[in-house]
Image (cartoon, rainbow, N blue to C red; front, side, top):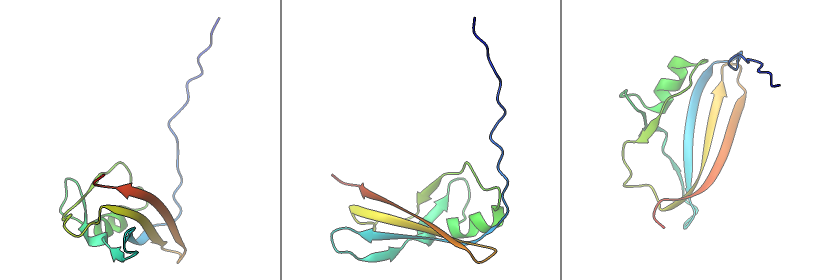
Length: 102
């Protein structure tokens, strides 16, 4: 005999709005740091990620981004995303490495 227990969707309580966001990459071949925040466009809009997220926070979710220009993106990078909340707290995440052209 088996039993099924239905579970509701995850519920999140957002207490803070994101006031600003930035995305920087590091070229792993040269250690050059580049801010690409304004090159990240939210798919289906003409807005950069730095415009879109503060306008739609705190419930921002389920969106895609794309690079508006890839000419200056190195082949091997790491990245850091930093968000500043309305209470002044800063949170960040680091990822990578990413290899675009093996």
